[in-house]
Length: 247
Image (cartoon, rainbow, N blue to C red; front, side, top):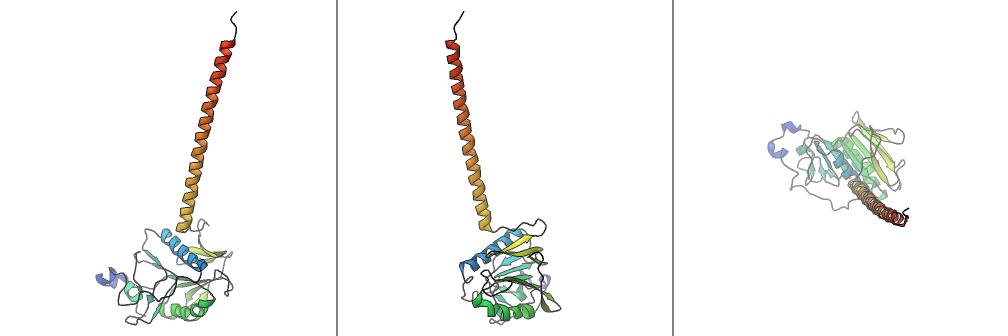
């Protein structure tokens, strides 16, 4: 693989976002099931929010080419993160053009993709692209045991990452990964809180808005009740004064 530093690339490369001369899709769907698709979408969304404003490129389901001029040498990571690159849309990911490979790849696997993920992709990420960290997640628990596995390059080969309290630490992200039901959570190791996907943030905002509206409604009802009570007391006071005999 050709490795170039971003500072050594000509301006034309730095301003580019992929290359139309290379394919932009492989015709395969995003995820095998609704569960797989949701995991991929949530991970990409949560990572983009987490790294917003930073030079970190987050993407997925994108063709990544690792041999200049060879249109057949590509993989399509479900989720990829590359630190030090400007965010923004790409037509594809040309490793030699970007100047570095992804720092992390996550594959959301199933029975139908296990051979490609465990054999071909594993070796490509290890030997060709040289991705520092590689994670596998089987949301339905169809074949992978444990369902979440991680590997880190050490001496040119992938070494399994040992779990700690049911989580796998990512040095590249400074986050932890944890399987929760059919979902794969990214955990902030400082706060212990999961990163929220855009849909979850939207749901939280909707819940907070509904709570605020309910609180305002209760306040209005309470104000109306107090006004009625004041009117009643005034009437009662007036009646009492008028009915009191004068001596």
